[in-house]
Length: 358
Image 1: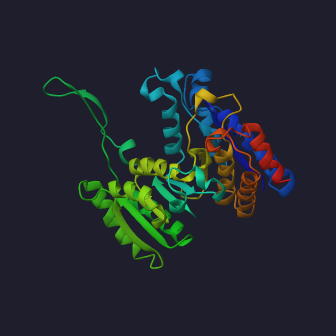
Image 2: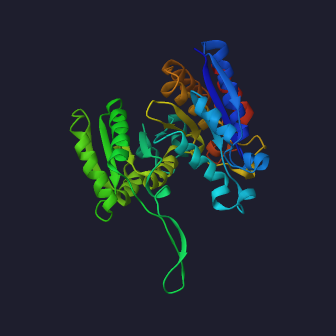
Image 3: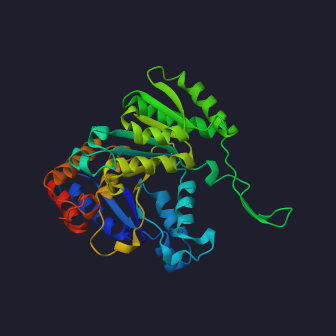
Protein backbone atom coordinates (compact mmCIF):
# COMPACT_ATOMS: atom_id res chain seq x y z
CA UNK A 1 0.00 0.00 0.00
CA UNK A 2 1.25 3.46 -0.86
CA UNK A 3 2.22 5.49 2.23
CA UNK A 4 0.96 9.06 2.26
CA UNK A 5 3.67 11.35 3.65
CA UNK A 6 3.16 15.07 4.19
CA UNK A 7 6.26 17.26 4.23
CA UNK A 8 6.07 20.52 6.18
CA UNK A 9 9.41 22.27 5.54
CA UNK A 10 8.53 25.34 7.62
CA UNK A 11 10.99 28.18 8.14
CA UNK A 12 14.69 28.99 8.27
CA UNK A 13 16.75 25.91 7.47
CA UNK A 14 13.58 23.82 7.33
CA UNK A 15 13.39 23.86 3.50
CA UNK A 16 17.14 23.11 3.25
CA UNK A 17 16.96 19.95 5.34
CA UNK A 18 13.57 18.94 3.91
CA UNK A 19 15.19 18.74 0.48
CA UNK A 20 17.74 16.24 1.83
CA UNK A 21 15.04 14.16 3.52
CA UNK A 22 13.27 13.97 0.17
CA UNK A 23 16.54 12.92 -1.48
CA UNK A 24 16.81 10.03 0.99
CA UNK A 25 13.18 9.06 0.43
CA UNK A 26 13.86 8.95 -3.30
CA UNK A 27 16.76 6.56 -2.68
CA UNK A 28 14.62 4.34 -0.46
CA UNK A 29 11.93 4.26 -3.13
CA UNK A 30 14.31 3.57 -6.00
CA UNK A 31 16.52 0.98 -4.35
CA UNK A 32 14.62 -0.51 -1.41
CA UNK A 33 10.95 -0.68 -2.34
CA UNK A 34 9.49 2.16 -0.27
CA UNK A 35 6.11 2.90 -1.87
CA UNK A 36 5.06 6.42 -0.96
CA UNK A 37 3.45 9.62 -2.16
CA UNK A 38 4.82 12.94 -0.88
CA UNK A 39 2.88 16.18 -0.53
CA UNK A 40 4.43 19.49 0.59
CA UNK A 41 2.35 22.02 2.56
CA UNK A 42 3.07 25.26 4.41
CA UNK A 43 3.27 25.74 8.16
CA UNK A 44 4.65 28.39 10.52
CA UNK A 45 6.09 31.63 9.24
CA UNK A 46 5.93 30.44 5.63
CA UNK A 47 2.20 29.84 6.06
CA UNK A 48 1.74 33.25 7.73
CA UNK A 49 3.37 34.89 4.72
CA UNK A 50 1.19 32.93 2.32
CA UNK A 51 -2.17 32.92 4.14
CA UNK A 52 -1.91 34.89 7.39
CA UNK A 53 -2.37 31.70 9.42
CA UNK A 54 0.51 29.62 10.94
CA UNK A 55 -1.50 26.43 10.34
CA UNK A 56 -3.90 26.82 7.41
CA UNK A 57 -6.85 24.47 7.34
CA UNK A 58 -5.58 22.88 4.12
CA UNK A 59 -2.27 22.01 5.80
CA UNK A 60 -4.03 20.58 8.83
CA UNK A 61 -6.33 18.46 6.66
CA UNK A 62 -3.38 17.14 4.66
CA UNK A 63 -1.66 16.15 7.90
CA UNK A 64 -4.80 14.45 9.20
CA UNK A 65 -5.07 12.42 6.00
CA UNK A 66 -1.41 11.37 5.97
CA UNK A 67 0.18 8.21 7.32
CA UNK A 68 3.09 10.30 8.61
CA UNK A 69 4.27 13.91 8.67
CA UNK A 70 7.85 15.10 8.18
CA UNK A 71 8.41 18.50 9.78
CA UNK A 72 11.44 20.73 9.20
CA UNK A 73 11.72 23.73 11.54
CA UNK A 74 9.61 26.68 12.56
CA UNK A 75 9.84 30.34 13.52
CA UNK A 76 12.31 33.19 13.34
CA UNK A 77 12.68 36.87 14.28
CA UNK A 78 10.77 37.93 11.17
CA UNK A 79 7.53 36.92 12.89
CA UNK A 80 8.30 37.91 16.49
CA UNK A 81 5.90 40.86 16.33
CA UNK A 82 2.91 38.64 15.57
CA UNK A 83 0.27 38.23 18.30
CA UNK A 84 1.06 35.17 20.41
CA UNK A 85 -1.79 33.12 18.95
CA UNK A 86 -0.60 33.92 15.42
CA UNK A 87 3.11 33.31 15.85
CA UNK A 88 4.66 30.38 13.94
CA UNK A 89 5.07 28.28 17.09
CA UNK A 90 1.33 28.38 17.73
CA UNK A 91 0.86 26.48 14.49
CA UNK A 92 3.09 23.68 15.74
CA UNK A 93 1.30 23.49 19.10
CA UNK A 94 -2.07 23.37 17.36
CA UNK A 95 -0.83 20.68 14.97
CA UNK A 96 0.31 18.47 17.85
CA UNK A 97 -2.97 18.97 19.66
CA UNK A 98 -5.25 18.46 16.64
CA UNK A 99 -3.45 15.28 15.62
CA UNK A 100 -3.43 13.91 19.17
CA UNK A 101 0.36 13.55 19.17
CA UNK A 102 0.77 12.97 22.88
CA UNK A 103 3.97 10.87 22.98
CA UNK A 104 7.21 12.57 21.99
CA UNK A 105 10.14 10.15 21.60
CA UNK A 106 13.50 11.92 21.68
CA UNK A 107 16.53 9.66 21.45
CA UNK A 108 19.90 10.94 22.62
CA UNK A 109 22.33 8.56 20.97
CA UNK A 110 26.01 9.26 20.43
CA UNK A 111 27.52 8.11 17.18
CA UNK A 112 31.00 6.90 18.23
CA UNK A 113 32.56 8.94 15.41
CA UNK A 114 31.45 12.11 17.27
CA UNK A 115 32.59 11.22 20.80
CA UNK A 116 35.09 14.07 20.82
CA UNK A 117 32.36 16.57 19.92
CA UNK A 118 30.33 15.93 23.08
CA UNK A 119 30.19 18.60 25.77
CA UNK A 120 31.36 15.90 28.21
CA UNK A 121 34.48 13.78 28.37
CA UNK A 122 34.42 10.90 25.90
CA UNK A 123 34.51 8.26 28.64
CA UNK A 124 31.32 9.69 30.21
CA UNK A 125 29.32 9.45 26.99
CA UNK A 126 30.73 6.25 25.50
CA UNK A 127 27.86 4.09 24.18
CA UNK A 128 25.32 6.77 25.15
CA UNK A 129 21.79 5.67 24.20
CA UNK A 130 18.96 7.38 26.08
CA UNK A 131 15.31 7.64 25.04
CA UNK A 132 13.32 10.50 26.57
CA UNK A 133 9.55 10.06 26.36
CA UNK A 134 7.92 13.47 26.76
CA UNK A 135 4.20 14.04 27.20
CA UNK A 136 3.35 16.52 24.48
CA UNK A 137 -0.26 17.72 24.59
CA UNK A 138 -0.86 18.50 28.26
CA UNK A 139 0.85 20.14 31.20
CA UNK A 140 1.65 23.80 31.60
CA UNK A 141 1.81 24.53 27.85
CA UNK A 142 -1.88 23.72 27.46
CA UNK A 143 -3.25 24.24 30.99
CA UNK A 144 -6.14 26.59 31.63
CA UNK A 145 -6.54 29.19 33.00
CA UNK A 146 -3.64 31.03 31.41
CA UNK A 147 -3.09 34.65 30.51
CA UNK A 148 -2.06 38.12 31.58
CA UNK A 149 -4.09 40.27 33.94
CA UNK A 150 -3.87 43.07 36.47
CA UNK A 151 -3.55 42.08 40.13
CA UNK A 152 -5.35 43.68 43.07
CA UNK A 153 -2.46 46.05 43.68
CA UNK A 154 -2.50 47.24 40.08
CA UNK A 155 0.54 45.35 38.84
CA UNK A 156 0.50 43.28 35.65
CA UNK A 157 0.66 39.57 36.33
CA UNK A 158 0.86 36.49 34.15
CA UNK A 159 -0.13 32.93 34.96
CA UNK A 160 -0.06 29.43 33.47
CA UNK A 161 -1.60 26.32 34.96
CA UNK A 162 0.15 22.96 35.10
CA UNK A 163 -2.44 20.19 35.01
CA UNK A 164 -2.72 16.52 34.11
CA UNK A 165 -5.53 14.06 34.63
CA UNK A 166 -5.14 10.35 35.23
CA UNK A 167 -5.96 9.32 31.66
CA UNK A 168 -3.28 11.63 30.22
CA UNK A 169 -0.66 10.24 32.59
CA UNK A 170 -1.71 6.65 31.97
CA UNK A 171 -1.36 6.84 28.20
CA UNK A 172 2.10 8.43 28.25
CA UNK A 173 3.14 6.09 31.06
CA UNK A 174 2.08 3.03 29.09
CA UNK A 175 3.89 4.30 25.98
CA UNK A 176 7.07 4.78 28.02
CA UNK A 177 6.83 1.41 29.75
CA UNK A 178 6.40 -0.33 26.38
CA UNK A 179 9.37 1.58 25.00
CA UNK A 180 11.44 0.53 28.02
CA UNK A 181 10.40 -3.10 27.46
CA UNK A 182 11.87 -2.93 23.97
CA UNK A 183 15.10 -1.37 25.23
CA UNK A 184 17.02 -2.03 28.44
CA UNK A 185 14.04 -2.66 30.73
CA UNK A 186 14.71 0.42 32.89
CA UNK A 187 12.40 3.45 33.14
CA UNK A 188 13.07 6.59 35.17
CA UNK A 189 10.02 8.77 35.75
CA UNK A 190 10.96 12.41 36.33
CA UNK A 191 8.75 14.78 38.31
CA UNK A 192 8.77 17.36 41.13
CA UNK A 193 6.53 15.48 43.55
CA UNK A 194 8.11 17.08 46.61
CA UNK A 195 6.60 20.43 45.59
CA UNK A 196 3.87 20.01 42.96
CA UNK A 197 0.50 18.32 43.45
CA UNK A 198 0.37 17.49 39.75
CA UNK A 199 3.69 15.67 40.05
CA UNK A 200 2.46 13.62 43.02
CA UNK A 201 -0.48 12.47 40.88
CA UNK A 202 2.00 11.67 38.09
CA UNK A 203 4.09 9.54 40.47
CA UNK A 204 1.05 7.75 41.90
CA UNK A 205 -0.22 6.78 38.46
CA UNK A 206 3.22 5.64 37.29
CA UNK A 207 3.53 3.39 40.34
CA UNK A 208 0.10 1.88 39.61
CA UNK A 209 1.01 1.21 35.97
CA UNK A 210 4.34 -0.37 36.84
CA UNK A 211 2.54 -3.38 38.31
CA UNK A 212 1.42 -4.34 34.80
CA UNK A 213 5.02 -4.33 33.54
CA UNK A 214 7.00 -6.57 35.90
CA UNK A 215 9.86 -6.79 33.41
CA UNK A 216 10.49 -3.04 33.64
CA UNK A 217 12.33 -1.55 36.63
CA UNK A 218 10.65 1.76 37.44
CA UNK A 219 12.49 4.44 39.40
CA UNK A 220 11.67 8.06 40.19
CA UNK A 221 13.81 11.19 40.19
CA UNK A 222 13.13 14.86 40.85
CA UNK A 223 13.67 17.00 37.77
CA UNK A 224 16.44 19.16 39.25
CA UNK A 225 18.42 16.04 40.20
CA UNK A 226 17.71 14.49 36.79
CA UNK A 227 19.20 17.53 35.06
CA UNK A 228 22.31 17.22 37.21
CA UNK A 229 22.61 13.46 36.69
CA UNK A 230 22.32 13.81 32.91
CA UNK A 231 25.59 15.72 32.84
CA UNK A 232 27.21 13.86 35.75
CA UNK A 233 26.56 10.23 34.78
CA UNK A 234 24.33 10.05 31.68
CA UNK A 235 24.74 6.32 31.10
CA UNK A 236 22.77 5.56 34.26
CA UNK A 237 19.64 6.33 32.19
CA UNK A 238 17.99 4.06 29.63
CA UNK A 239 14.43 5.31 29.13
CA UNK A 240 13.06 8.47 30.78
CA UNK A 241 9.43 9.60 30.95
CA UNK A 242 8.29 13.02 32.05
CA UNK A 243 5.78 15.80 31.47
CA UNK A 244 5.72 18.45 28.79
CA UNK A 245 7.75 21.24 30.40
CA UNK A 246 10.34 19.00 32.09
CA UNK A 247 10.69 16.92 28.93
CA UNK A 248 11.30 20.01 26.84
CA UNK A 249 14.18 21.05 29.08
CA UNK A 250 15.74 17.63 29.73
CA UNK A 251 15.68 16.52 26.10
CA UNK A 252 17.59 19.63 25.04
CA UNK A 253 20.07 19.00 27.85
CA UNK A 254 20.54 15.42 26.67
CA UNK A 255 20.98 16.67 23.11
CA UNK A 256 24.22 18.42 24.01
CA UNK A 257 25.71 15.16 25.24
CA UNK A 258 25.67 13.81 21.70
CA UNK A 259 28.01 16.33 20.10
CA UNK A 260 25.42 18.41 18.27
CA UNK A 261 21.71 19.07 18.40
CA UNK A 262 21.98 18.77 14.61
CA UNK A 263 22.21 14.98 14.99
CA UNK A 264 19.00 14.33 16.90
CA UNK A 265 15.65 13.25 15.45
CA UNK A 266 12.32 12.93 17.22
CA UNK A 267 8.95 11.27 16.81
CA UNK A 268 5.58 12.47 18.08
CA UNK A 269 3.00 9.69 18.05
CA UNK A 270 -0.74 9.32 18.52
CA UNK A 271 -2.48 6.34 20.09
CA UNK A 272 -2.43 4.40 16.81
CA UNK A 273 1.25 4.99 16.06
CA UNK A 274 0.68 7.65 13.40
CA UNK A 275 3.32 10.27 13.86
CA UNK A 276 5.07 13.49 13.04
CA UNK A 277 8.84 13.32 12.69
CA UNK A 278 11.20 16.25 13.06
CA UNK A 279 14.72 17.21 14.10
CA UNK A 280 14.91 18.67 17.59
CA UNK A 281 16.90 21.73 16.52
CA UNK A 282 15.45 25.12 15.66
CA UNK A 283 15.11 27.05 12.44
CA UNK A 284 18.58 28.74 12.55
CA UNK A 285 17.59 31.58 10.20
CA UNK A 286 21.14 32.95 10.24
CA UNK A 287 22.34 30.02 8.10
CA UNK A 288 19.16 29.40 6.08
CA UNK A 289 19.81 28.97 2.38
CA UNK A 290 23.60 28.93 2.83
CA UNK A 291 24.15 25.17 2.45
CA UNK A 292 25.48 25.14 6.01
CA UNK A 293 22.82 23.25 8.00
CA UNK A 294 23.34 19.68 9.19
CA UNK A 295 20.60 17.56 7.56
CA UNK A 296 21.37 14.37 9.51
CA UNK A 297 18.77 14.92 12.27
CA UNK A 298 16.12 15.32 9.57
CA UNK A 299 17.39 12.23 7.76
CA UNK A 300 17.36 10.26 11.01
CA UNK A 301 13.78 11.47 11.50
CA UNK A 302 13.00 9.72 8.20
CA UNK A 303 14.44 6.58 9.77
CA UNK A 304 12.19 6.95 12.82
CA UNK A 305 9.21 7.43 10.51
CA UNK A 306 10.03 4.19 8.71
CA UNK A 307 10.30 2.34 12.02
CA UNK A 308 7.30 3.69 13.95
CA UNK A 309 4.66 4.68 11.37
CA UNK A 310 5.44 2.82 8.14
CA UNK A 311 6.32 -0.56 9.66
CA UNK A 312 9.65 -0.67 7.83
CA UNK A 313 12.22 -1.13 10.54
CA UNK A 314 14.51 -2.62 7.90
CA UNK A 315 14.63 0.72 6.10
CA UNK A 316 15.22 2.55 9.37
CA UNK A 317 18.24 0.33 9.99
CA UNK A 318 19.54 1.05 6.49
CA UNK A 319 19.26 4.82 6.91
CA UNK A 320 20.94 4.79 10.31
CA UNK A 321 23.73 2.59 8.97
CA UNK A 322 24.17 4.94 6.00
CA UNK A 323 24.52 7.92 8.34
CA UNK A 324 27.18 6.05 10.31
CA UNK A 325 29.13 5.25 7.16
CA UNK A 326 28.96 8.88 6.02
CA UNK A 327 30.44 9.91 9.37
CA UNK A 328 33.08 7.21 8.96
CA UNK A 329 34.03 8.79 5.64
CA UNK A 330 34.93 12.03 7.43
CA UNK A 331 32.17 14.26 6.08
CA UNK A 332 31.33 16.94 8.65
CA UNK A 333 29.04 19.95 8.59
CA UNK A 334 30.22 22.88 10.68
CA UNK A 335 28.32 21.89 13.83
CA UNK A 336 30.09 18.52 14.11
CA UNK A 337 33.51 19.53 12.78
CA UNK A 338 34.85 19.79 16.36
CA UNK A 339 36.61 23.10 15.83
CA UNK A 340 37.98 22.13 12.44
CA UNK A 341 36.82 23.42 9.08
CA UNK A 342 33.58 21.89 7.77
CA UNK A 343 34.19 19.28 5.08
CA UNK A 344 30.64 19.16 3.75
CA UNK A 345 27.52 21.24 3.25
CA UNK A 346 23.85 20.43 3.55
CA UNK A 347 23.32 19.11 0.02
CA UNK A 348 26.56 17.12 -0.16
CA UNK A 349 25.83 15.44 3.17
CA UNK A 350 22.32 14.48 2.10
CA UNK A 351 23.62 13.22 -1.24
CA UNK A 352 26.26 11.15 0.54
CA UNK A 353 23.61 9.39 2.64
CA UNK A 354 21.49 8.79 -0.46
CA UNK A 355 24.52 7.35 -2.24
CA UNK A 356 25.10 4.93 0.62
CA UNK A 357 21.52 3.70 0.10
CA UNK A 358 22.08 3.11 -3.62
